[in-house]
Length: 322
Image (cartoon, rainbow, N blue to C red; front, side):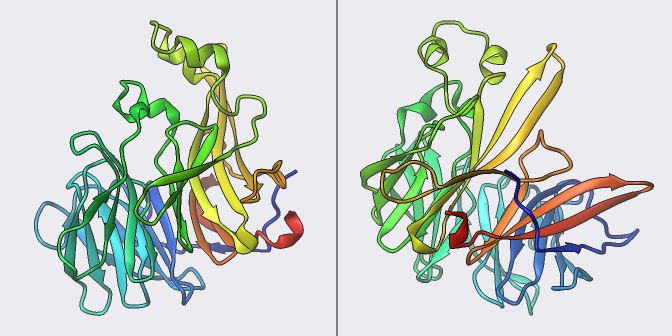
């Protein structure tokens, strides 16, 4: 089964200001689109129709400059949180004054930040401090380091288990357990209290024989051929959980064949409600996602004739899917 978009919006950049390689997508409550561009080290802003509005920041190491802008989180219609992973910090960018109003230090590897109840959360495996995540209320001083880092992130091969991902709702924090077989459910102080298995199909999760041999000299490329890489979480209406993952395999040691899936599962420990493929022109790379309520936005960046197109597809993840 494949998702079908109910609308598509092309982001109309310019010859002088264009998206070279997008790294993240965020959609504000008013429907504006924000995209980080890796080559220019900037954030590009578009209105709800896809028309270009402005650039945010510029390349560099000074004030209002970025070296590695990645995750984007709109706090409201006035403030955008931009995680600059190379400078190991997130900035609160005031859209009207075009200035940074606050800084949040980051340990390095972090998930996209989530803003809930005037508080920012990010899954941030921090081996130095032994903590799993960060909680920070803007204007309240230093961030709190919470939870306990999982052993898998102390492993040389942590990268093959997938990216940190986080969802926050009610009194719960949900995040990947460092592997693709389950989601950990913790309280707001990041103390684990339960786990939710992710249903496994071909190449989803870590095959048992690889799980036992990865520490015994198994070639990491052989491992990568058979892994599913989780990269996103979202809590939907009705307590459903959407898990995003890239399933890939290598053909003849050269050609990478992949598919991006969204698995929707209930919070109760029950079989998945649906397992659906997310369309993309490049199915071997992780797509850029954003959500407003139960509407999924997927940014696709591809060549169309003589042009490079940035297009946002909108999908409704309604209760009828489950």
